[in-house]
Image (cartoon, rainbow, N blue to C red; front, side, top):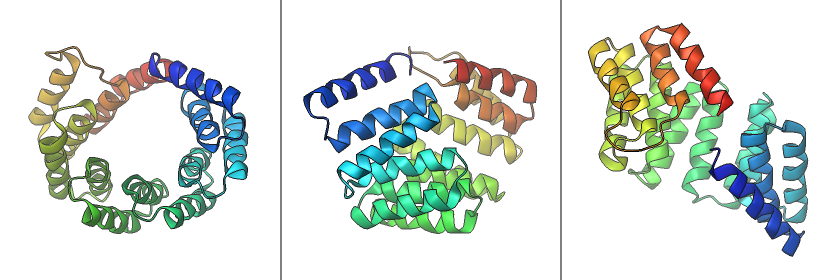
Length: 223
């Protein structure tokens, strides 16, 4: 993140120098402002600017919905992501984020239904597999969760996000040894790769080690 987000911000600002009425650039800048700068007020202003420039740009509504969900404005977030879906009904990521919005609103049955619909569009769409697996963790359907994460691993390989979900499912289903093995794999990777402290923290939560989880969450926030 420390390498990529400043480059994203620089590119978006350069694009706006070339054309201040470019909704895509306003959206990219707004999303960087949200995710990296944590400047909620300016992020919302920039999303609103993007939508004003092009009300039919689905990604602006999509990313703005995440901004709203971050602020706990659930109903508004649902309205924005549904608008994105209306504009781009075949978008896998938009359909998946609609499910994720339900998930964040604790509407787990609706989330499962939406992730299932997304996977009907593409059974190998990894974000939906991961999100469906995460929802099954919340509903204590651990066998189903493991199945989703295992399928995601077969498609995407052993990256931090996939292994984090699988380790949580192992830990919560009673397979502590399997979860610990994945933790060790992520903490001492055989090749140079980025592993988010956030991904590790969620495993430690599932293992019941709250102190280690909080330390990792603080590290993730700092990074």
